[in-house]
Length: 382
Ligand SMILES: Cc1cc2nc3c(=O)[nH]c(=O)nc-3n(C[C@H](O)[C@H](O)[C@H](O)COP(=O)(O)OP(=O)(O)OC[C@H]3O[C@@H](n4cnc5c(N)ncnc54)[C@H](O)[C@@H]3O)c2cc1C
Image (cartoon, rainbow, N blue to C red; front, side, top):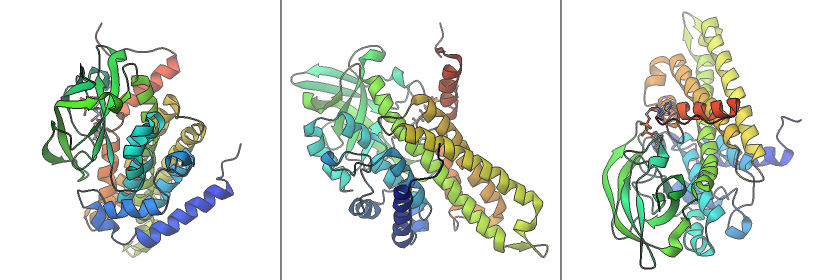
């Protein structure tokens, strides 16, 4: 067993760190406070080979590993926390599911544009009445000549205010096995966006309404029975979510560490107060422990999708550690940390959202408990 990165991984992480320090550190604060997508960063990352890291070269990607993509998130976030979202969108989210299960037509039509950083794809799962209980979703795909008519609404979808494509979970038939997914362009007739809203992080989202949208047969990604495959792919998204939590927690930790080395009160540096030293020690323990779980889940996934159990443990640890790190960093930095002139309060707001998105902490614990006891615990009333 070896806990070190390989020389190639070190070299890759170093080169991304240098790229980020040079091109992304300038403007990092401003970027964090903008609601829309950083398209300039997206195109720059495409040129740099940071989109499609885990996607096969034959499909226009880099043919790298999931660990490489995690390293890219960490290296980018160390200079610009907001830009880590672009690494997520170009590697971990629905783009990866599209690359895995999409037809040649899907790849030709959508993937190349996404990999150029010129568009972004969302995943539409959540509905007003189906959040944690996602299999309760009611968006229907009703057979119609040569395809389907889709009716339903999705909420809280990341990038929904400007995405050009939505990987939409739909119901072809009743029950778990009736769920599958279709690809819907947001300019298609019958796709309507509701009034834009904002998360606590400042990111925009809009309700998506599908009013009898025609989806031709060849835009079906996974037919009925595809739910388990979709969730297997969604575990990649969860790794990206976990990686960003950890990376933003580390960013905040580093800001607070530097602050504690230069800020004086009572004639002493903050780092000389034991009450604060112990905060740093506790946070380092949480971050390093979470990182090991994250690397385990990602490294073990290199020949496929990550395991549900390892991903749940990694996401739970990283979501909690990232939030705790940002929260303690803010406390150490006092009024400066709480002010919008520092990115620490932004990291705190972002990390808070990831405790809900992509499987809330509670739902992850439910999944972990099932592994511990080797049985399933249905959450529905008898
Ligand atoms: C920042 C952010 C980004 C998101 N991005 C997307 C996206 O791109 N696409 C998308 O489709 N959705 C997205 N979502 C939605 C997200 O998936 C849901 O918010 C999440 O699944 C929870 O659903 P809910 O908000 O309806 O809460 P509910 O399901 O109503 O849950 C409310 C609370 O009850 C708890 N709870 C529910 N059931 C149980 C149980 N059985 N045991 C214990 N506790 C339980 C939950 O953990 C939560 O704390 C995003 C959400 C956020 C915050």
